[in-house]
Image 1: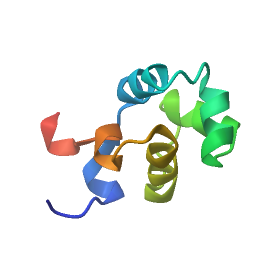
Image 2: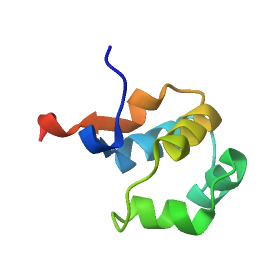
Image 3: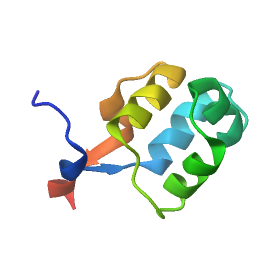
Length: 78
């Protein structure tokens, strides 16, 4: 697969919440703290106010035990 770029992807908050629920992580705040991401930044990302960096997506994916591609979609899919 080609490498992810921020310009080509859209963050999938629903996928984040599904993965979080499967891992038994009760809140986005708890996930943010586990991932080493600022909880306020994750809140802004999930509300669509900002886009995450690829580093942030990677940290969230690692904390969830999933690949980063599970948390993003190609812009061309929309």
